[in-house]
Image (cartoon, rainbow, N blue to C red; front, side):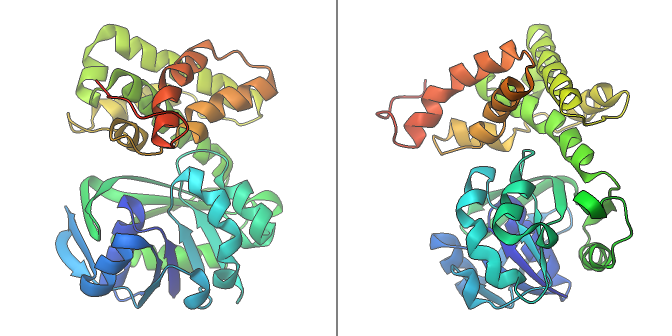
Length: 318
């Protein structure tokens, strides 16, 4: 199977390395220092699944230079999806399809608006991985897990194209599930990653501190409640006991674990604030759901985000 991966950060770089090591033909869309490093030395991965270096079959900044693929794993940050979506048409021109792997709940519709509904399926991933240097990926914890699912009229139906992609991913050591309701699965992850990232970014603390301080733990639970209420208002059915299961998962994380949005905000980089905390506020307003905690978290974090994007003068992050 010919698989294109868009983005060479923690998620994209890890998946590219694992798939290339397994013998899959990997096409990698990257840019800047990451592209240069991968072209010269491949993707270097430090993971519980092994320490190794693997080379994609081809890599380029322009997706059109790589030719069509069977599947396209879109692993850029959520705020970058809209900008790159229209450039991915050459990758799906031969009948391929795109899989969004972003944190958030709006990536699939954004891709579909540019590529067509039939060229986009639902997707999400659970993994703790990040870039230590261009082309060098660090992965900790459990094996990466990808969830796939058809959308719209095809939701819940058997899908040969998803089964083929799942087989390739499993062959690389990646856990895969195929969801009958991938939108609900996306909101299940959102209930995990968004409250964690928002509260942790505001607290500027690793998970051990969030779960150890009763007041902050209560704040995290309250943020989960707001996301659950928003999902229900949008007609998304989440499993009973999901909040308890999500909290148990957070309690099992390595003590120093941090969320990706938290790391970006802390480092002064543009983050997914608008697609996580901001999305909750925006979607809640449209649905008529009160989310006072998220409005407060967004107000606290916006100055740092706007400074990172050059919309405010830079200031010391003390």
